[in-house]
Length: 344
Ligand code: CP3
Image 1 (cartoon, rainbow, N blue to C red):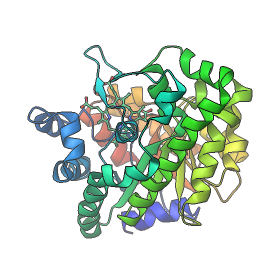
Image 2: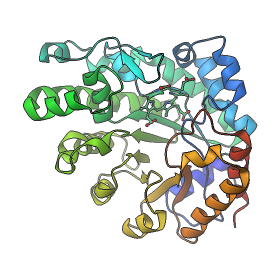
Image 3: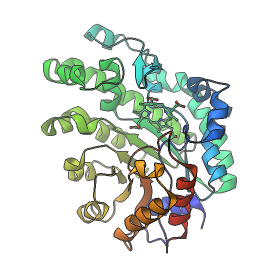
């Protein structure tokens, strides 16, 4: 069976011999071939050069042909950058935005959402290059973006944050300004995702990496409502996967948001989540990424335990509970690929 067919069948919750497999941030620092390219070009140069972005995207598939999907090599923060707020990486790790959004005037001065497809044309170009390559290898191709709330945290905090106090403060003290920012991000993401779909993405994953830091009662108004709007504005039936870290209490609301699949972090019990989700919704996850730094034996045992826990339940896409880390071991990744692809 072709990887792309397996991936789309899992998203449609059709029964399969074994689940498809891909991992988040598979184009990462754990691969020597990625580090070799990065020694010559910066991360953002690679992201903005379609031929390089396509090459990095394909690196993990060349090393591990058993992976079923390629995820575009890019970053969620290209959207703030296209709206006029560039970013860089801190020496100490984490993100540093060029400035912090502090006033309503700054929010209003961001570029209009309509500017996004043109400013991010390099993403469409990279996807079109990739579409040709994966048509030959049979892999599925994923596009992605951040959720409006997760992007807003970086924009309002001025980068990575420990407490997200500024983003939460704006939500509680100036809702009109908060809504203006989230509305702009929502519109930008809708045109960005439409562009990715037109360029050949088979599915889109939305990363709500910081949905879980919100107070429970605020999750709907600060995050999920904007995600729902995005999904409603995409072609009917187009598969959207929602990864929202640390948001297990909101599973039922997420399941009713219009997305096709829910991707859960490693703290969730996969079988319990499966039982709670409607049968027509796919479930993605959720091996603890830290296991990829242990041994092949441990990875095999834990991946098998996870596979067994949802055996016979259609609609499982095997993934890590978060992105793969730079210290992941290649032999652990190989063990994961072998375990999932030979599972029956
Ligand atoms: O899975 C993939 O390889 C697809 C490409 C992808 C990247 N980032 C490439 C990347 C995806 C899907 C992302 C998503 C992303 N980016 C998120 C959401 C997912 C999550 O992790 O919760 C977030 C929050 C970002 C912003 C971002 N970009 C962070 C926080 C970092 C790490 C900064 C640090 O401390 O080093 C990045 C860098 C980044 N994005 C790398 C890659 C491959 C590492 C770049 C490098 O150092 O070589």
